[in-house]
Image (cartoon, rainbow, N blue to C red; front, side, top):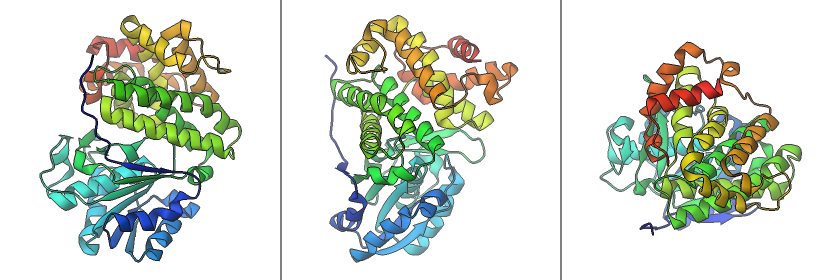
Length: 383
Protein backbone atom coordinates (compact mmCIF):
# COMPACT_ATOMS: atom_id res chain seq x y z
CA UNK A 1 0.00 0.00 0.00
CA UNK A 2 1.69 3.20 -1.25
CA UNK A 3 0.22 6.51 0.00
CA UNK A 4 -0.32 9.31 -2.53
CA UNK A 5 -1.83 12.77 -2.95
CA UNK A 6 -3.32 13.14 -6.42
CA UNK A 7 -4.74 16.44 -7.59
CA UNK A 8 -5.11 16.88 -11.37
CA UNK A 9 -4.44 20.51 -12.29
CA UNK A 10 -4.79 20.35 -16.06
CA UNK A 11 -8.03 20.16 -18.01
CA UNK A 12 -7.56 17.92 -21.07
CA UNK A 13 -9.51 18.71 -24.24
CA UNK A 14 -8.99 15.97 -26.85
CA UNK A 15 -10.11 15.53 -30.46
CA UNK A 16 -9.52 16.51 -34.09
CA UNK A 17 -9.98 20.23 -34.76
CA UNK A 18 -9.87 21.19 -31.08
CA UNK A 19 -7.27 23.90 -31.76
CA UNK A 20 -10.23 25.98 -32.90
CA UNK A 21 -11.35 26.18 -29.26
CA UNK A 22 -8.08 27.71 -28.04
CA UNK A 23 -9.46 31.26 -27.92
CA UNK A 24 -12.62 30.34 -26.02
CA UNK A 25 -10.65 28.25 -23.52
CA UNK A 26 -8.11 31.04 -23.06
CA UNK A 27 -10.92 33.49 -22.42
CA UNK A 28 -12.30 31.16 -19.76
CA UNK A 29 -8.93 31.37 -17.99
CA UNK A 30 -9.44 35.11 -17.64
CA UNK A 31 -6.83 36.25 -20.13
CA UNK A 32 -6.92 39.24 -22.47
CA UNK A 33 -3.27 39.41 -23.64
CA UNK A 34 -1.81 36.09 -24.81
CA UNK A 35 1.86 35.47 -25.49
CA UNK A 36 2.15 32.39 -27.71
CA UNK A 37 5.35 30.31 -27.89
CA UNK A 38 6.10 28.16 -30.96
CA UNK A 39 9.10 27.07 -32.98
CA UNK A 40 9.99 27.76 -36.63
CA UNK A 41 8.77 24.36 -37.84
CA UNK A 42 5.35 24.80 -36.24
CA UNK A 43 5.11 28.31 -37.67
CA UNK A 44 5.98 26.99 -41.15
CA UNK A 45 3.29 24.31 -40.84
CA UNK A 46 0.69 27.01 -40.21
CA UNK A 47 -0.31 25.79 -36.76
CA UNK A 48 0.89 28.90 -34.92
CA UNK A 49 -1.24 31.16 -37.09
CA UNK A 50 -4.27 28.94 -36.49
CA UNK A 51 -3.72 29.34 -32.76
CA UNK A 52 -3.26 33.09 -33.01
CA UNK A 53 -6.37 33.38 -35.17
CA UNK A 54 -8.47 31.52 -32.61
CA UNK A 55 -7.16 33.78 -29.84
CA UNK A 56 -7.89 36.93 -31.83
CA UNK A 57 -11.39 35.76 -32.70
CA UNK A 58 -12.04 35.47 -28.96
CA UNK A 59 -10.95 39.08 -28.51
CA UNK A 60 -7.45 38.56 -27.11
CA UNK A 61 -4.41 40.67 -27.96
CA UNK A 62 -1.60 38.39 -29.14
CA UNK A 63 2.16 38.25 -29.64
CA UNK A 64 4.23 35.39 -31.04
CA UNK A 65 7.59 34.07 -29.78
CA UNK A 66 8.90 31.66 -32.40
CA UNK A 67 12.71 31.60 -32.30
CA UNK A 68 12.93 28.66 -29.88
CA UNK A 69 15.63 26.04 -30.23
CA UNK A 70 15.36 22.30 -29.69
CA UNK A 71 16.21 21.53 -26.06
CA UNK A 72 15.54 25.14 -24.93
CA UNK A 73 18.24 26.83 -22.93
CA UNK A 74 18.46 29.76 -20.55
CA UNK A 75 19.17 31.90 -23.61
CA UNK A 76 15.77 31.00 -25.09
CA UNK A 77 14.10 31.84 -21.78
CA UNK A 78 15.92 35.19 -21.58
CA UNK A 79 14.82 36.09 -25.13
CA UNK A 80 11.21 35.15 -24.34
CA UNK A 81 11.35 37.08 -21.09
CA UNK A 82 12.39 40.26 -22.90
CA UNK A 83 9.35 39.99 -25.16
CA UNK A 84 7.08 39.26 -22.20
CA UNK A 85 8.34 42.30 -20.30
CA UNK A 86 7.54 44.47 -23.32
CA UNK A 87 4.15 42.90 -24.15
CA UNK A 88 2.95 42.41 -20.54
CA UNK A 89 0.82 39.27 -21.10
CA UNK A 90 -1.69 37.91 -18.62
CA UNK A 91 -1.81 34.50 -20.30
CA UNK A 92 0.75 32.18 -21.91
CA UNK A 93 0.28 29.55 -24.62
CA UNK A 94 2.80 26.85 -25.57
CA UNK A 95 1.94 25.63 -29.06
CA UNK A 96 4.43 23.13 -30.43
CA UNK A 97 6.62 20.33 -29.12
CA UNK A 98 8.15 20.03 -25.69
CA UNK A 99 10.61 22.83 -26.47
CA UNK A 100 7.88 25.44 -26.97
CA UNK A 101 5.94 24.33 -23.92
CA UNK A 102 9.02 24.16 -21.69
CA UNK A 103 10.23 27.58 -22.83
CA UNK A 104 6.81 29.06 -22.07
CA UNK A 105 6.92 27.54 -18.59
CA UNK A 106 10.46 28.82 -18.09
CA UNK A 107 9.43 32.36 -19.00
CA UNK A 108 6.47 32.01 -16.67
CA UNK A 109 8.83 31.30 -13.75
CA UNK A 110 11.11 34.30 -14.24
CA UNK A 111 8.44 36.72 -15.49
CA UNK A 112 6.22 36.24 -12.44
CA UNK A 113 8.82 35.45 -9.76
CA UNK A 114 11.95 37.29 -10.92
CA UNK A 115 15.53 36.11 -10.80
CA UNK A 116 16.94 33.68 -13.37
CA UNK A 117 16.11 30.14 -14.46
CA UNK A 118 18.78 28.62 -12.24
CA UNK A 119 16.86 29.92 -9.20
CA UNK A 120 14.05 27.44 -9.95
CA UNK A 121 16.15 24.32 -10.51
CA UNK A 122 14.49 21.79 -8.25
CA UNK A 123 10.97 21.64 -6.87
CA UNK A 124 8.56 24.29 -5.54
CA UNK A 125 10.98 27.23 -5.72
CA UNK A 126 8.44 29.80 -6.96
CA UNK A 127 7.00 31.99 -4.18
CA UNK A 128 4.50 34.10 -6.20
CA UNK A 129 1.51 33.10 -8.35
CA UNK A 130 2.23 32.36 -12.00
CA UNK A 131 0.27 33.25 -15.14
CA UNK A 132 -2.33 30.78 -16.41
CA UNK A 133 -0.95 28.75 -19.31
CA UNK A 134 -2.51 26.63 -22.03
CA UNK A 135 -0.58 23.95 -23.92
CA UNK A 136 -1.25 22.74 -27.46
CA UNK A 137 1.21 19.94 -28.30
CA UNK A 138 1.98 19.33 -31.97
CA UNK A 139 4.00 16.18 -31.22
CA UNK A 140 3.31 13.01 -29.26
CA UNK A 141 6.35 12.83 -27.02
CA UNK A 142 7.30 14.80 -23.94
CA UNK A 143 3.90 15.02 -22.24
CA UNK A 144 4.96 18.47 -21.03
CA UNK A 145 1.34 19.61 -21.34
CA UNK A 146 0.37 17.50 -18.32
CA UNK A 147 3.45 18.16 -16.18
CA UNK A 148 4.41 21.00 -13.85
CA UNK A 149 8.09 20.76 -14.85
CA UNK A 150 10.08 22.82 -17.33
CA UNK A 151 13.27 21.20 -18.63
CA UNK A 152 15.73 23.98 -19.44
CA UNK A 153 19.43 23.61 -20.29
CA UNK A 154 22.01 25.94 -18.77
CA UNK A 155 23.48 27.86 -21.70
CA UNK A 156 27.01 27.65 -20.28
CA UNK A 157 27.23 24.20 -18.67
CA UNK A 158 24.66 22.46 -20.95
CA UNK A 159 23.24 20.76 -17.84
CA UNK A 160 19.51 20.11 -18.10
CA UNK A 161 17.68 21.70 -15.19
CA UNK A 162 14.34 20.23 -14.14
CA UNK A 163 12.38 23.15 -12.70
CA UNK A 164 9.11 22.01 -11.17
CA UNK A 165 6.33 23.80 -9.36
CA UNK A 166 2.63 23.01 -9.11
CA UNK A 167 1.93 26.65 -9.99
CA UNK A 168 3.56 26.01 -13.39
CA UNK A 169 1.06 23.30 -14.38
CA UNK A 170 -1.00 24.19 -17.45
CA UNK A 171 -4.62 25.12 -16.87
CA UNK A 172 -5.67 23.47 -20.15
CA UNK A 173 -4.05 20.99 -22.54
CA UNK A 174 -5.58 20.88 -26.02
CA UNK A 175 -4.79 17.57 -27.72
CA UNK A 176 -5.59 17.89 -31.42
CA UNK A 177 -4.18 14.89 -33.32
CA UNK A 178 -4.58 16.72 -36.63
CA UNK A 179 -1.66 18.93 -35.62
CA UNK A 180 0.66 15.90 -35.50
CA UNK A 181 -0.02 14.94 -39.13
CA UNK A 182 2.56 17.44 -40.38
CA UNK A 183 5.42 15.98 -38.34
CA UNK A 184 8.36 14.67 -40.38
CA UNK A 185 8.80 10.91 -39.96
CA UNK A 186 11.95 11.40 -37.90
CA UNK A 187 10.17 13.69 -35.43
CA UNK A 188 7.27 11.25 -35.18
CA UNK A 189 9.72 8.45 -34.39
CA UNK A 190 11.91 10.38 -31.95
CA UNK A 191 9.02 11.78 -29.95
CA UNK A 192 7.20 8.44 -30.01
CA UNK A 193 10.22 6.62 -28.59
CA UNK A 194 10.54 9.27 -25.89
CA UNK A 195 6.88 8.78 -24.92
CA UNK A 196 7.29 4.99 -24.81
CA UNK A 197 10.32 5.46 -22.55
CA UNK A 198 8.19 7.59 -20.23
CA UNK A 199 5.54 4.89 -19.97
CA UNK A 200 8.10 2.14 -19.29
CA UNK A 201 10.17 4.09 -16.76
CA UNK A 202 7.31 5.58 -14.76
CA UNK A 203 5.73 2.15 -14.26
CA UNK A 204 8.61 0.92 -12.09
CA UNK A 205 10.07 3.96 -10.29
CA UNK A 206 10.39 4.08 -6.53
CA UNK A 207 7.83 6.91 -6.55
CA UNK A 208 5.18 4.91 -8.42
CA UNK A 209 1.65 4.87 -7.01
CA UNK A 210 -1.61 3.21 -7.99
CA UNK A 211 -2.55 6.41 -9.83
CA UNK A 212 0.73 6.81 -11.71
CA UNK A 213 0.76 3.13 -12.67
CA UNK A 214 -2.74 3.42 -14.12
CA UNK A 215 -1.57 6.25 -16.36
CA UNK A 216 1.67 4.40 -17.24
CA UNK A 217 -0.19 1.22 -18.14
CA UNK A 218 -2.69 2.96 -20.41
CA UNK A 219 0.06 5.07 -21.94
CA UNK A 220 2.00 1.89 -22.74
CA UNK A 221 -1.08 0.27 -24.29
CA UNK A 222 -1.76 3.27 -26.53
CA UNK A 223 1.84 3.92 -27.50
CA UNK A 224 3.05 0.37 -28.03
CA UNK A 225 0.09 -0.53 -30.23
CA UNK A 226 0.16 2.65 -32.34
CA UNK A 227 3.87 3.41 -32.82
CA UNK A 228 4.37 1.04 -35.75
CA UNK A 229 1.07 2.22 -37.24
CA UNK A 230 2.05 5.89 -37.40
CA UNK A 231 5.41 5.02 -38.93
CA UNK A 232 3.78 2.85 -41.59
CA UNK A 233 0.77 5.10 -42.23
CA UNK A 234 1.53 8.74 -41.25
CA UNK A 235 -1.99 9.86 -42.20
CA UNK A 236 -3.70 7.40 -39.84
CA UNK A 237 -5.49 9.93 -37.64
CA UNK A 238 -6.75 7.31 -35.20
CA UNK A 239 -3.19 6.08 -34.59
CA UNK A 240 -2.00 9.68 -34.28
CA UNK A 241 -4.67 10.29 -31.66
CA UNK A 242 -3.62 7.18 -29.76
CA UNK A 243 0.00 8.34 -29.72
CA UNK A 244 -0.90 11.86 -28.58
CA UNK A 245 -3.20 10.66 -25.82
CA UNK A 246 -0.63 8.06 -24.76
CA UNK A 247 2.11 10.69 -24.55
CA UNK A 248 -0.15 12.91 -22.45
CA UNK A 249 -1.01 10.06 -20.08
CA UNK A 250 2.70 9.28 -19.77
CA UNK A 251 3.23 12.92 -18.83
CA UNK A 252 0.67 12.53 -16.07
CA UNK A 253 2.53 9.44 -14.90
CA UNK A 254 5.79 11.44 -14.75
CA UNK A 255 4.03 14.11 -12.72
CA UNK A 256 3.12 11.50 -10.13
CA UNK A 257 6.07 9.08 -10.24
CA UNK A 258 9.13 10.74 -11.85
CA UNK A 259 11.55 8.92 -14.21
CA UNK A 260 14.55 6.59 -13.88
CA UNK A 261 18.01 5.58 -15.03
CA UNK A 262 17.36 5.69 -18.79
CA UNK A 263 16.88 9.45 -18.62
CA UNK A 264 19.85 9.78 -16.28
CA UNK A 265 21.96 8.02 -18.93
CA UNK A 266 20.46 9.95 -21.84
CA UNK A 267 20.97 13.49 -20.56
CA UNK A 268 24.81 13.40 -20.50
CA UNK A 269 24.79 12.05 -24.07
CA UNK A 270 22.77 15.03 -25.21
CA UNK A 271 24.90 17.49 -23.24
CA UNK A 272 28.26 16.09 -24.35
CA UNK A 273 27.59 14.99 -27.92
CA UNK A 274 24.33 16.73 -28.85
CA UNK A 275 22.63 13.37 -29.39
CA UNK A 276 18.91 14.01 -29.81
CA UNK A 277 17.02 13.06 -26.66
CA UNK A 278 14.72 10.47 -28.28
CA UNK A 279 17.72 8.71 -29.82
CA UNK A 280 19.69 8.82 -26.57
CA UNK A 281 16.94 7.57 -24.26
CA UNK A 282 15.74 4.99 -26.78
CA UNK A 283 19.25 3.56 -27.10
CA UNK A 284 19.80 3.29 -23.35
CA UNK A 285 16.33 2.12 -22.28
CA UNK A 286 16.69 -1.60 -23.20
CA UNK A 287 19.87 -1.81 -21.12
CA UNK A 288 18.15 -0.17 -18.15
CA UNK A 289 15.21 -2.57 -18.43
CA UNK A 290 17.59 -5.53 -18.33
CA UNK A 291 19.42 -3.99 -15.35
CA UNK A 292 16.15 -3.37 -13.49
CA UNK A 293 14.79 -6.81 -14.33
CA UNK A 294 16.74 -8.35 -11.48
CA UNK A 295 14.52 -6.43 -9.06
CA UNK A 296 11.23 -5.57 -10.80
CA UNK A 297 10.76 -8.39 -13.32
CA UNK A 298 7.19 -8.95 -12.13
CA UNK A 299 6.31 -5.32 -12.77
CA UNK A 300 7.46 -5.58 -16.37
CA UNK A 301 5.31 -8.71 -16.69
CA UNK A 302 2.38 -6.69 -15.34
CA UNK A 303 3.02 -3.90 -17.86
CA UNK A 304 3.20 -6.31 -20.78
CA UNK A 305 -0.06 -7.93 -19.70
CA UNK A 306 -1.72 -4.64 -20.74
CA UNK A 307 -0.95 -5.54 -24.38
CA UNK A 308 -1.36 -9.32 -24.08
CA UNK A 309 -2.59 -10.82 -27.33
CA UNK A 310 -1.73 -7.76 -29.43
CA UNK A 311 0.04 -8.66 -32.67
CA UNK A 312 3.74 -7.81 -32.65
CA UNK A 313 3.90 -7.10 -28.93
CA UNK A 314 6.10 -9.19 -26.60
CA UNK A 315 4.78 -12.12 -24.59
CA UNK A 316 4.33 -11.00 -20.99
CA UNK A 317 5.93 -14.22 -19.77
CA UNK A 318 9.28 -13.04 -21.15
CA UNK A 319 9.21 -10.04 -18.81
CA UNK A 320 12.24 -7.76 -18.78
CA UNK A 321 14.17 -9.56 -21.53
CA UNK A 322 11.21 -9.62 -23.87
CA UNK A 323 10.45 -5.97 -23.21
CA UNK A 324 14.10 -4.97 -23.75
CA UNK A 325 14.23 -6.86 -27.05
CA UNK A 326 11.01 -5.19 -28.20
CA UNK A 327 12.28 -1.72 -27.32
CA UNK A 328 15.53 -2.32 -29.23
CA UNK A 329 13.49 -3.50 -32.23
CA UNK A 330 11.43 -0.30 -32.19
CA UNK A 331 14.59 1.79 -32.29
CA UNK A 332 15.80 -0.19 -35.29
CA UNK A 333 12.36 -0.01 -36.93
CA UNK A 334 12.50 3.76 -36.67
CA UNK A 335 15.86 3.80 -38.43
CA UNK A 336 17.92 5.07 -35.49
CA UNK A 337 21.30 4.04 -34.17
CA UNK A 338 21.33 1.05 -31.85
CA UNK A 339 24.93 1.42 -30.63
CA UNK A 340 26.70 4.32 -28.93
CA UNK A 341 29.67 4.05 -31.25
CA UNK A 342 27.36 4.93 -34.15
CA UNK A 343 26.41 8.17 -32.33
CA UNK A 344 29.99 9.42 -32.16
CA UNK A 345 30.52 8.80 -28.45
CA UNK A 346 34.13 7.53 -28.00
CA UNK A 347 34.72 4.68 -25.59
CA UNK A 348 37.31 6.64 -23.58
CA UNK A 349 34.61 9.17 -22.62
CA UNK A 350 32.32 6.54 -21.06
CA UNK A 351 33.69 6.89 -17.49
CA UNK A 352 33.09 10.63 -17.68
CA UNK A 353 29.55 10.06 -18.92
CA UNK A 354 28.90 7.52 -16.15
CA UNK A 355 30.00 10.02 -13.51
CA UNK A 356 27.63 12.60 -15.01
CA UNK A 357 24.76 10.10 -15.18
CA UNK A 358 25.18 9.26 -11.49
CA UNK A 359 24.53 12.92 -10.66
CA UNK A 360 21.28 13.14 -12.64
CA UNK A 361 18.17 13.77 -10.57
CA UNK A 362 16.02 11.15 -12.27
CA UNK A 363 18.45 8.35 -11.44
CA UNK A 364 17.52 8.47 -7.76
CA UNK A 365 14.02 7.21 -8.59
CA UNK A 366 15.23 4.13 -10.46
CA UNK A 367 13.83 0.97 -8.82
CA UNK A 368 17.27 -0.62 -8.61
CA UNK A 369 20.01 1.57 -7.14
CA UNK A 370 22.65 2.32 -9.77
CA UNK A 371 26.23 3.24 -8.91
CA UNK A 372 28.76 4.93 -11.18
CA UNK A 373 30.06 1.47 -12.05
CA UNK A 374 26.53 0.35 -12.94
CA UNK A 375 26.04 3.34 -15.23
CA UNK A 376 29.41 2.62 -16.85
CA UNK A 377 28.43 -1.01 -17.39
CA UNK A 378 25.20 0.07 -19.13
CA UNK A 379 27.12 2.49 -21.36
CA UNK A 380 29.59 -0.31 -22.17
CA UNK A 381 26.72 -2.67 -23.01
CA UNK A 382 25.28 -0.02 -25.33
CA UNK A 383 28.61 0.81 -26.96
